[in-house]
Length: 346
Ligand code: FA5
Image (cartoon, rainbow, N blue to C red; front, top):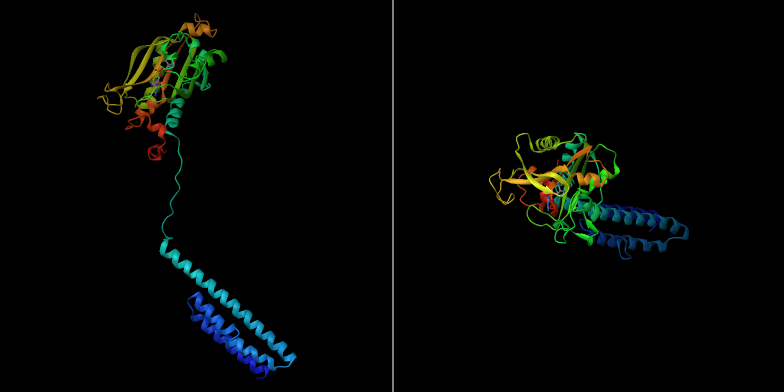
């Protein structure tokens, strides 16, 4: 064969290969086809043997044509296999995924119900002119009890009720009232503060949790009397629960207030009928309050002949349980079950 004839045959085979390649639908079939043309015994491989009959010059040119043809075939084999893979992926995607379905939005976080209620309550008091004050969760016996007029043998000072860090000295605050003392010692008169925060006690039942939240309020000025306290608490209850919600005031005792009262509101869960949440009474105690005991004022250097004050401490969890109906146990607030928390998304 002369060079022209070889090249013509090569072109013919290359065209034949391209035509055959179109028909193949598996990788194996493509590879077999490649071997049928390019291997030593393949169609092009056999043709290449005829190069031996040519002169060195002719062999160079024709050899070049063979290289080019083989490279083109190798490339078209790779492209065909890529195409097969791509098509298989498309089939897989269309079979298993419906790309027209709307996407699933990720779950959005939200404020915890206790935080929501705490902010709402603090807003009511700041709108009445109260400033927000803070104090530490780990307190001294001095601020938590002694300066609040608790006698040494008061039951709250017992290990049964208080979580001590260092017995008799350092403790987890059992109420927010130590912030009263800290504020009176640090601020100029008149004083008008609310102090929201976590408190800790050895308590555990459907309406009592070992950690819960309180908001303390304190107002000290000249001429403050019990009527002011009732007015402020009325405004708070009506703003938070609605103007028609009933409250009742019961005489009580706290070492740091005189007189002292406890304020209940009607149990919203059972509408006053009596249920497990309100221990069948129809009422739930939400706060303690009273006029600041003159001993407490004198203990922080305030002249009780000139100044008087009122204070209150309310349980945020109790308010939250009443505000959101159907919360049968305070524990739900602290289990952090997303199905429960979801309800409070705003
Ligand atoms: C006090 O803690 C006083 N410091 C409140 C006070 C402040 C009185 C200023 C006078 C002047 P008491 O122990 O009653 O009081 O708690 C106040 C409120 O916290 C209760 O009315 C109740 O709503 C809530 N509370 C008490 N214990 C728990 C508990 N274990 N879990 C959830 N809420 C509680």
